[in-house]
Length: 375
Image (cartoon, rainbow, N blue to C red):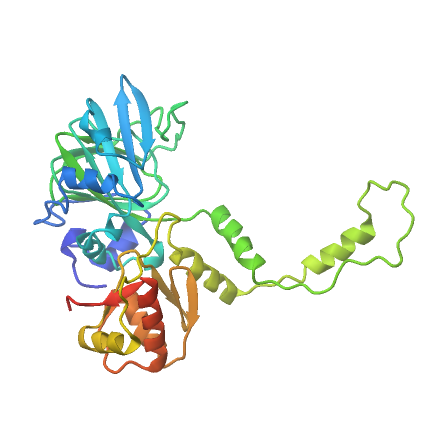
């Protein structure tokens, strides 16, 4: 917390969180001095054409915007002309170097991490001035991009555009970024990035869920966990003047039943663990084609350790770990081991306890982790 961090411009984590996080932008020159990118444009386009990848193609022609969503074929990119941008989400799920890049940002809780998005655009490309409802670090790879920002409150959008483009964007500051430079932007800071030549930008995004979204999903979570006994009954039913009216007796009886629904902070913690670790709908896990026996898996895990699959999300609370949307309550003795796995995404094991081994082996069969052959 108190060590100056070069990719935060010499700030300590404590200083960055206190003075900038969710408060104001920060430009860091040469945040990653040796960074030239993890992919070239053709590799990114190939990834955009891969099954189970979220990608978008944004085109601008005569001031009009067009948006195309994946799936894509290579032919979609062969005849492109003019101003366009391709954006690929979740690159960290497919590229180990992407996951390693995210490890630099472990000072932000994993529960806040969204993903690594990578974009490519030829000269003039961009997605227009807009607001984002999340925190983002914009790390420049190939080429140069000019960023313009504004703290304006006017959020009026261009009517009919397929993207949320600001109608009246008032530039307050602007910078040109080259390879290794990075710009942090808090939520709702209006920004516009324009490629000055062939340009690739790496966006490390941190989600900020809306309370409405969380409340709706919490009610979905509750519906599978509540149990209200009894059935509606009215043996003392009285004649009503208007049979179409919902009478006070029915209203009171049902209200009393529904008011028996209760939840506490632990219920909310379990909901958050399940919901925030739940993979996005397009994500699937590959199970091992020729799985090891439990004995062979134990030997491999003790020799090499285990590493989480790039797509796996793992969170912790209390003495429960949540992996890809499923909670696993643990004993006090085993919880620290699996919390370490959640923290670092890989661990070495020396004669793991049976509870740990059982879970790790099941997660291996599910495709959530694998023995770490590169340890």
